[in-house]
Length: 543
Image (cartoon, rainbow, N blue to C red; front, side):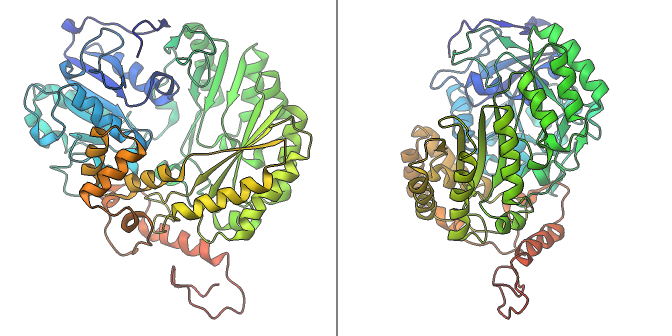
């Protein structure tokens, strides 16, 4: 990590004049960290307290981690808070702790070591793989619990002996002290959520590796949670209920944020933008103010000429859709009931207003057949014929990863061999199409992601060894061999719905009964009227 990244709005306090020195740690690089809205929220929220100085510590490879604001070493902070956005970052979490000279395991830390806390979507998913290394996990939103956590820690004189007391707070999972499943805490209204309007913006060139993904942009969360319930999606179940920011509050935050952050672009953040009722009006308000705009993935049913015209005027050149599957049948199984014709119509509107289209697909979904793979080819080819420029239709094709707290958490992940064959089939049939390109991540990393999503505390040793060996795929293979933990036994098998699993130590507010019913509904979609075969997966009479 370079030490001279020019920024505006970085907050620097005198560490000698605060009660708590808080290191906000991110296990990925600077670009990813500064593209994460939650990272900005925590940084501003913590520094809003007069008794706290929060400084950012970004993953710096094999160096001893230090803060960007004062070059303070990670080990010298009172609290280290990790933001866990991606499972495959776990090796870097342990590497940062180890490189800082802090004992890896919570049980080995002494009074002079910082309290290590972790939050983020991966915690609500399943904290157990890191349970021997993290002192406390925040399950759910930070706003309802963060102040209480810091106040209680202060009342205990910043003593690590206070862990048992901290474990009694709502939403706090302390692996050595929490006995009952910890209930997720959540911000009841987005109006009350913390909105950072003075965001840190790097003053670098557009092509700099330190430029955030969205460029020099004000990030604004307009919705939290998702109302659609796609059966494979973690956020769709761990983020319930959906909460929207009023348009009035959004516009006020944009006006203040643009002025304080010195930007000319606004990026709207939400798991489901289409659930935001005033999306079109908000987009037009932004661009009519002379600002550029950026939005993430859009649902097919929210695509309209009016919305696309606003995005085009705001400088967006690519729209993103997530069909996920190649046929109407499989999308119905996923609870994503858009037809090929509806997707094609949305793509046609996008081609007329914007330049490019990106589409997400998942391989190896429950009940997937070769017809579903052919469906991806047919849909992509049909859309490519609309007149998009060369490589103007980009397919992001990735393996299915079973996620805890979803209706598909009991499913087996398809083998790496299957994913490769499916990918090669699609690639070979689209190879001659100049308008369509493919990307995606290695299915071997998909298997590692599944291991970290579904594994228990015993997987922690695999993470530790893999971190020690460098974190590459070879390092993971070596770590698995040495620990004799079978990847296939964890990820490539169906799971018993009646069994207790590591992620059952957190309660995200969605019952297992409901998830099982949703799983039944998924398989019911493929029933035939005269079927007499009892399905081994869900007990329904289906084919």
